[in-house]
Amino acid sequence: MYNKKYNKFFLLVTVILLFYSVGGSVNKFNNITNRTIIPTSPDIIIQDLKYKSSNKQHPRLMATKEDFNRIRKLLKNDTYLEQWYQQLTVEADKLLVDPLIKYEKSGTIRFSPSSDNFLNKIITLSLMYQLSGNERYADKAWEELEIVSNEAYFHDWNPSHFIDTASIATAVAIGYDWLYEYLQPNQKKTLQNAIVNKAFDPALKVYTNRVNGENITTFWNTSNNNWNVVSNAGLIISALAIADETDELEKESGEILEHALNSVKNSLETYKDDVGAIEGPNYWHYETMYIAYFLSSLNTAIGTDYGLSISKGLSETGYYPIYITGTSGIFNVGDSNEENFSSLPQLFWFSNKYKKPEIALPALSKFSPMNIVWYRSSNSLPSTKNTLPLNRLFMDKNIGIATMRDSWSDPNTMFLAVHAGANNANHGDLDIGTFVLDALGERWINDLGRDNYNLPGYFKVNSRWDYYRKRAEGHNTLVINPSKDPDQEINAVGDITMTNIDSNIENVSINMTAAYKNSKSIQRDFLFTPKKDKITLEDTIMLNDFSEIYWFVHTTADIVLSNDKKTATLNKNGKSFYIKVTSPLDAHFLIWDAKPLSSSPNPTIQSNTGGYKKLALNIKNTKNTSIAVVFSTKPF
Image (cartoon, rainbow, N blue to C red; front, side, top):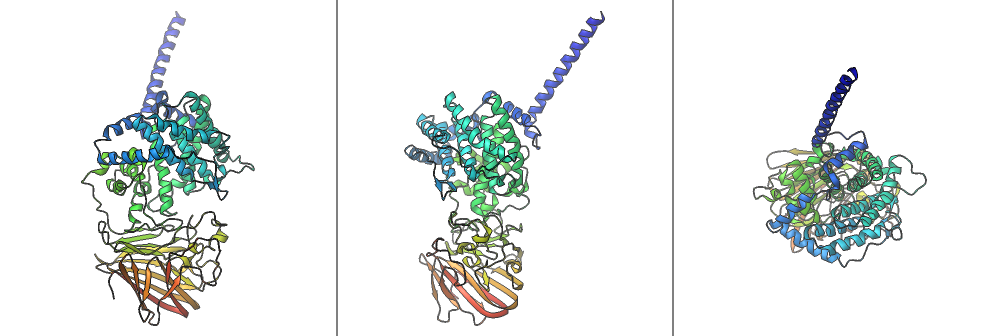
């Protein structure tokens, strides 16, 4: 009798425990979207993946089956999607006859052509297959994927330049995911093995400090720059693609996800209150693309990004490309190019994620395959207009950028962008005080931008400053007592402020004192006049000793000087722009080629600057002086 009662009681307790255990489990999974902390166990991450993408559901990276169904239905009903699909078709058709990727390096360092070209190729072909169902696109994508997976052609994915590894891993993962229904079991196995052997294995050695003499880049694990984002993003996306295929893949993918999710916080933490980019616009674009890749993939595959997207800086970073874009190019500080962004698909993702409709506006006029994935019809509502303030200060001391303009819509508006920031920023230059200036639809004052990455010592502190484009003399700023040494202090940080004098006048000031050895005080001020058809630049200089000062601006325009050489007329494309020096009274302009001073290093292998001229002032034997120059769209 006792045993029967005991057995019934035991059975009842067991049922109750099971009920609450299952209920708790269901509740746990139903609340995945509310999680804001990275799980402490990789097993939990895999469980979350298997719950949200149950029964090996694919696609799951950045878009699901439902997303692709929605896009197909809208292709003929949404003007933007229809236009982008036509462009996608053209690009995909070109790729059908494109040569297959080869294992080639540029300067023995990075893959050439870029591994990101390969990523774009796989995205284009795989997306075209998803939307059209035409297997010729999948066939071509598989040919490419098979090459990078085959030991005979790609024995590795270049872990010595790990962002190549990450980029190819991202491409293989997206191909695996978006072509999942097309791929045969043996093809899937080939791609799984490639991801594990060529991405996961070297990455786990980095994460666990087991790199021992192998040629594998390791610094990205603890850095806070683009390498950290790109490397971890590629690994996260790859793990999400294949984690639930086998027990072994679950284990290794879980480890990768745990390490990568924690490591990537290093770079995401740089997106705090400010919305700028320490590494300049090109690297903002590069980094935020991978941020959008991996955060959107976490949400579609798992249902949460574990709080990684919760950041004021991330929610507002989409404003950065809007503000640093002028009428004739971007403000290309550091290793960036002057040309406008050719695509900005990540702005759709940021706009929708953070519910900021105006952020998406610049992306509507550009094409990228990822437009089609991240765009929503709400991004193109007629009611969405750019009502942003005209001026912006990115005041983080390492960024230090101010931009001003007359109008968002007038193509002839005057646009000024000024840089202080940190000289030792990753991809930074010795350029505190530099600026660019657009007016009348032209860029009149240019930044020369990047040089060849394969130049000897280009990324080494002791030799980077030998190259003209990286020195202060290669920018639109001051040089004091020039020599073969760096012409600004390499660890200097410029302090920048913006003051609204009244409703029409804006003033930007940079304290440049720290940039120069022989300085008591150096202040550079830019003043927009009420109608903003003029800008006044004034440098107030106090030095410890009598010195020689050079004032430089670079331009691609033709320059004509007045008889007294105090006024320069810049001519370009049938338009004219005017520059006048008003102080010191005896100062006059010089026209020079854009090349190093005779006292400066002049490596013969650096890029040609023949398309630029330099407008210069040279003031000798002075301690205290004020240099004032006026820039105008109208003759003086």
